[in-house]
Image (cartoon, rainbow, N blue to C red; front, side):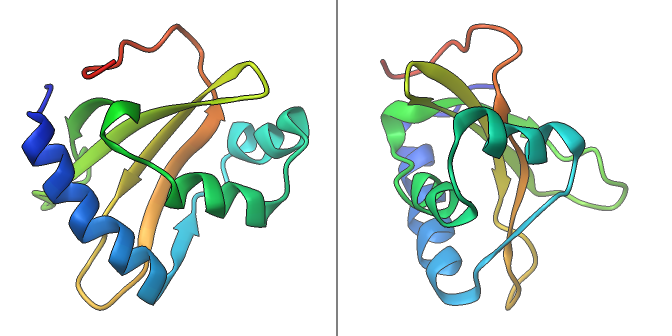
Length: 115
């Protein structure tokens, strides 16, 4: 589902300050780890890229597949050295780290909602 630009702004207004306060946990999926090598970036650079997410980077919102969870997964894309990167994040539980489920090269061209 695609959210309005106001809804994306609301998400970012919650996500980014929480990220700065609590930090972020990355799922150690093989393709997420390989992406750092493929993009020749450090973990700190990956953090900066996620901190720079904005409305124009927004792709779509997905419902969480985890049982008993009602939160959403937010999909964004970024161009890094001419390569499109698929980024999927969630706010996470209160008083805990934000979550990055995916940070890897896009497997298909992304359709940005506001570009």
